[in-house]
Amino acid sequence: MLYWFDLFGVFVFALSGALAADRRGMDLFGFVAIALLPAIGGGTVRDMVLDVPVFWVQDAVYLWLILAAGLLTFVAAPLIHRAERLLLWADAVGLSVFCVVGAAKALVVTGSATVAIAMGVVTAVLGGIVRDVVCNEIPLVLRQDIYATAAFAGAAAYVGLVAFGLDPSLGMLAGAALCFCVRGSAIIWRWSLPRRGTPS
Image 1 (cartoon, rainbow, N blue to C red):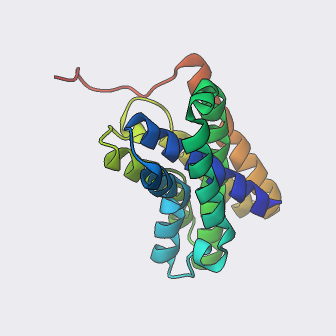
Image 2 (cartoon, rainbow, N blue to C red; image 1 turned 90 degrees about the vertical axis):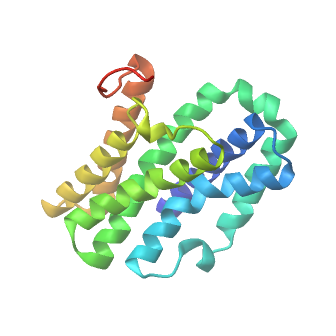
C-alpha cells in the first residue's frame, strides 16, 4: 500500500512541475524535465545523503510515471489548470506521503530521530524548491504559506509515535494525517507564518 501511495505522490508532484513549465511557456522537453524535479528531487537527495541506492534507479516505474505526467500536462494543460484547486489538495496528499516515507526510510537506516525528521522534510519539500528556482519563482516554502511546517509536523509525529512503540505502519498513517490536516487547514483558512517587515 505504501508503494502505491509513493507512486501517487510522485505523479502529483510531477504534475505540479509540468504545470510550472506550462506557466513558463516551455517546450515538451521542459515539461518532462521540470516534472522530474519535485517528483524525485527530494527523494534522490535523501537517498544520496543516507548512502543507499536511489529509489528510482532501482525501480524505473517512477520515471515512466513522471514521463506520463509530463506528456499528459503538455497535451491537456488547459483542463488540468481548471482543476488546479483539486491539484492543490492532491499536492497536500503527496506532501503528507513523502514526509513520512522519507522519515521512515531515514529512521531505518540511521536510527536517529533527528535525522529522520530532517530527511522527512527534505524528501517532501526539496524537489519543489529546486522546481521553483529553475522556473525563476520564489520557492513556496520560503513564502508565508504553511508548507514545510506541515511536513515537519508529519515527520515528527511519525518519529515520536514510533518511539513510543506504535506500529510503524500506523505511525505513518497518523503522521501523514497530521501533515494533511495542517496543510489543509492552511489552504482553507489561509494560515501563514509571521514575517518581519514588508517586501521592498
